[in-house]
Image (cartoon, rainbow, N blue to C red; front, side, top):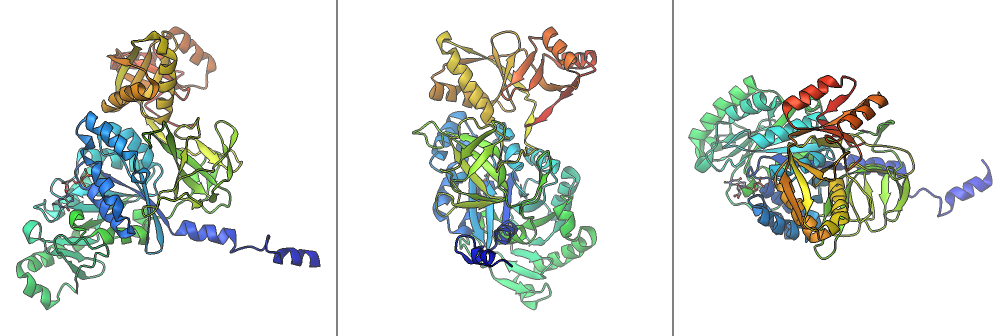
Length: 547
Ligand code: GDP
């Protein structure tokens, strides 16, 4: 070897300070990024709080709780949204558990904001499904699980509120299997319920964890009794233990055995029983996430798949939140890191704009401390404040043209026409709606003919939020009027001529959305069907992916 080369290797500048590739691989392997899906009131907030207890971030617990009333009324929601400004950390919570870095992504509970939830779910690697065991599978859970299924996201299931009278556990599993079309593999099994809830039996470990109400300890150290045949149990609660033995026999015969591969491919869910409010069974869920849920995996970036362990940084924006700080008009884009190592101050390419940006003031979401992020790896979420023209779905990378896919937009069901009282404010209106459209707060359609803008939403609360934000942030007093539009479809075709004919002939019903995609605004189901028949060269899409 050349002597010079050896010397260079030893110089402090170039000597590999722990080989970067090995560091990245190790950091990726210990990351778990998940979201909680549930119907409102199943216990998501409570469970989130308990999960945070494990991270030692107890001061945040109140913040989580404070958000709850928001789902009942808009005015409440607005206040709550303002309060939320206090805590960046409430949207993404990062904490450590057993040497692992856990990123928990919050999803809005109210179904009117379900679009936001769908997009958050594109940024997770697994999901925790919380079910109120007294109620079973509820409407919102069905929808959210459908979204998870689009990417075969692995699901861990938590049956909550066993300290209350619940439905029969076998029946619950049956319902999950038949309604949600996912195999259940019970991992723990409840012993009694309500006043007679004694604990859970761990089917894989053959041990019983005894229930104690109101256990708030972060270590969740409940008493464990080894072996279902342990005579101690028969002494403590003879009736329930008899029942348990019968049920366990049934369960072994009738349900699925946990299979890691089936879980990872999204066809099977391990099921745990417990009580979030009593912190009972919470640690078991965390363990399942650490032991079984996947670390970040490769992601489709259109030109190729990107491995999380690649040395170069890449990621995409899945959510934009405005007014994190009520005192300033600011926006934070939440970016999921997909590969490489993010370092504070690094320059990355904003691919849609073809521009380099320096990521200097970036926030991280450590639940226990709100520090400026120094580094991040695949699976982590970083917050980019005020980088101007960001849209949901934007990709960032160190140079290469990657476009991450999979951020869904759903054709809205509700429409409003916007007018303003003061015509001098029309510029502000357009600017405001453009930004709110890019944020995904509402979908904005600009018809090719006519001056009115059409707003589309999935939930009616979205309109109220937009009206209030237009007033407060852009000084625009807008009036929303009912619209003759009943549905929207994005339109595409390889035939450019057909597209422009379509635009020319149906100008009042053809519009561009905030991202510049062509859409057809139908006045009725019949109108939509006839139009589709008349324009066979065009394809009409009920969803679109950000591109
Ligand atoms: P979210 O709407 O899914 O966030 O649900 P919350 O966490 O706000 O819980 C809804 C209600 O259920 C609250 O009154 C909680 O105190 C209650 N709750 C949550 N977990 C439990 C539990 O394990 N047992 C009982 N009895 N109540 C619970």
